Image (cartoon, rainbow, N blue to C red; front, side, top):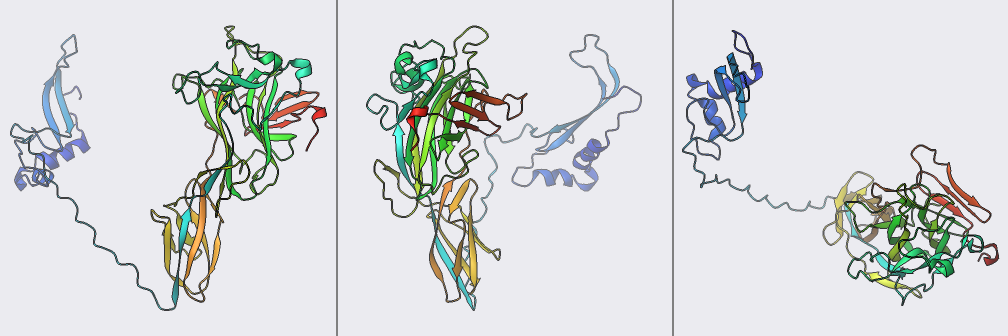
Length: 457
């Protein structure tokens, strides 16, 4: 819209408008081309309606909200309409669009001379529960070692059962959970609303166990955290010597408007442990939950108590291949099942996708050795590749086992790995005579959780 003696020239819009609505010399062919396919051609006068079109008007104009009622001497307006029907539009009669024809069946490629095929199956591992801890009176502490390395100097605050926070399943508000400082001589005296103590060193440790037959393994636990951000923390860690533990730590508050109950599911992937790497195939492994606090703050700026850390529904499990032979104390949680949507690729570029039953076939391969590689986003495979020899003909029963490899810690915005944004990764450390903790951007290393007299295995 423009004030002036000469109408505003809106080149592109006017060109489209003219093409659609001012082609009378061509029998309104352009308008019919827009309206006829799958719709009734109820076209009226130019510029008034259309299924897809541009409206055009010219003349004096006054905006309704203009208190001065100023009239523009010349106005040129073009409006794009998505649907602007005429009076005779049949609202009750929607257009009928024919569905596309069914695709013609495709015959499988015929075998080519001097070629062979390879076929097989992909499946998920069978999952075995190594240990579970629901934090209830009939299971606690079970075979978990409860340790307080510094209780002689800073008090006996250990892991223990509590009903201060409703259980993470939220079904029974009275169900017990694990409180990081709810056990021990001093911890049992804490009220639900009391702040956690300074210099807490509260551990619960399980092991040793082995992952000799595992192609995947993880420790999953629901946690509730309310601590001084970046400094006091709950760590979920693993070790191969029961002295040095590595893993992620969380601090801050897990309570938010989006998560009012405060429970967050956390996973420690034992195939990708901070600084340690994969623990798959190892003989002796320990896992731990450790609650660590410093000697300063345990209340927020308003004087409200930080309530510490809680845990619930802990499950340590491994994925295995072949026949499931659970060891002592182990429970088979889920049998192996097919894995579809896996791309099996040969080194010459030929590939096939597994079907709903996990089956695949790669036909018309040269009669030579081929390396087959499985891939699916979010999965790792055992074995990573298989070499097949087709020199003597077809090969069948090739088997891959795929396990989900995406087990990132499920942080919410206020629950983060304890590294202050303004400091380097190496600056966060807690040290005393028997204990050290050093945190980087991806996780933490905890050294010396046991008393000197406890010894090592």
